Length: 272
Image (cartoon, rainbow, N blue to C red; front, side, top):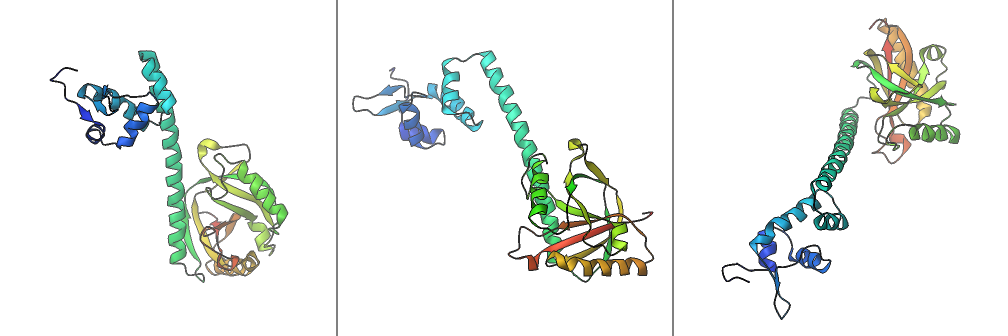
């Protein structure tokens, strides 16, 4: 070792690179990155010349590479091998960003529902404007919300890209013509809101426009009374309803019993 070469102890070199000294011990033990010099008593010493190599290892760790992957590359460094790392990690990062955007979109949707519930007047029926939405449709359901309907829900949810039961907005649909006949349990199918890019053959378009909106708190057996109030409101406002009633639970992740469950009902106003 030349006299002008500065030696760092393990603690000093770890501090220089903002890592724990145990990391350097581990890297040495597995042969990934070893000290420049070891004394007869086993003390490890590092030099400035080793800093670029260590920083390369640390950069690869930040990229999520395993110790084995880093070791293989460090033993066979080449332009094609580094190109492979770049391509692989760029693809992984793109996928991660896509997932994070999806998670953020979900959180924004849940935050809107939470804010809506916090200031909710259950007696209020009003109008709300909604954008065009794409809905993935399930097979028919009974409307009894029994084991059979739950099976349909699970199977339907599993058909949705990136499935998790609570990471999408689910609901059920009833034709307005059934509501006008007071067939309030004539649920036609379940729906899931999806991105336009994931269209399938069994999707429907929920039109943009002005909708009548009402809320029901409690079990689904309370929905008929809410529908009667909603229909009376539409009649009083001289509004003709069209298409479907869309039922959607908006607080299923924060309740401890069905008595607290809030269902949002929206129905398109004709000509809006």
